[in-house]
Length: 511
Image 1 (spheres, rainbow, N blue to C red):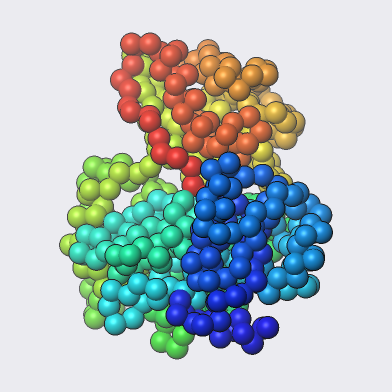
Image 2: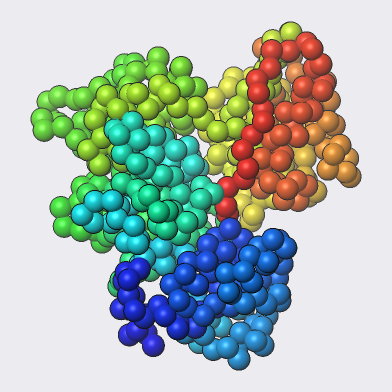
């Protein structure tokens, strides 16, 4: 059976027909897997502890079987099925008992491996569209969107997909096809990606933007998390893009097994050296993809362009530089990169200004800061802050974050059902900073109470910053739900005494 699976390297391979497949999980990714496999002619059974009713109905329509069952123990029906292949949705961790059973008793793929194998269903040119792959602890989505915009500005049909919310399998089956796929990859997806064989992705260019501990409860250790992130560079064809200020990303590139001729390209907030993109005075420059890179540089964009697009904060500038390197690897012209930057607008809930009160207090929503590394980026962007934080910390220690930013805070408002880690960290590192706890038991009241507390300590010129450094699911439906509720509470509190921005955000991305 392993031989038969190894030969499945095209949409048009005959072996898909009659293949007995189990799909674990029925989110957007799980459904796209089931839909694809049914279209290929495989026999598909989906196992999930819960699922939207409309998804279950659609499974019946397309001809897949659904078994509603907990996956914290191996379902009897799965063991009896003894499938040829198990495709695991990225939400399920490797220590899950059903996943462990599948690894021992079958062959396990993730959705990315399946998508790579069938990427040639719709081909616009002589070969299937190349992939540009992006990961990192923070900045993945913005960089993915920027990179896509740059390819589009070059006149190519490009698409942002993967962890950004659009399953790659839906993209490779688009009847119009694409010239390039810009694929955001979570550490979960990378964990399940193939190391070798027909299912191993060969990206045109790849990037790990940064690395800091996150999702440790899923991976089991910081080492396992970093090993998953490092897989983004494996088998890269043209350019491995790394963060000059993050030695871990450089080490990942040095250790990667890449295609002969692939180059390491750094991005830096400082003056770039040869084979780097960076900043000279107020100009973003390319010294990597120019013939005389030792003696000259190409202008990509200006600081004024970044200001116009709301991308002038230090971490957003780094995202632009990484995206530019990935675009230049695909021969996107500097003029196209500049046009894309000028027209770009970042998503909601990413250091987004919600309102400025009449007395000059600025309210900022960075609900997307779901870990300490992301919170560090936003906290570094403001001088005097009233900090709203807390939620699910996913096994990550926030002690260092509080030690760095806590003592300088004007005040701190603590949300979340488990506030102990925050309270203990502030007791150690910033015991004199005003610390206000949100006690509201009802989700509807959490943000109104947090806003009232923040307003009570904020002074003219301060920034009230929602940078939770934690996931949202203990009290909210998603980081977007948390951000929307914060914005609504701010506008309700300020009434007409504010200069406000539109806060109607997009739907959440996949995990």
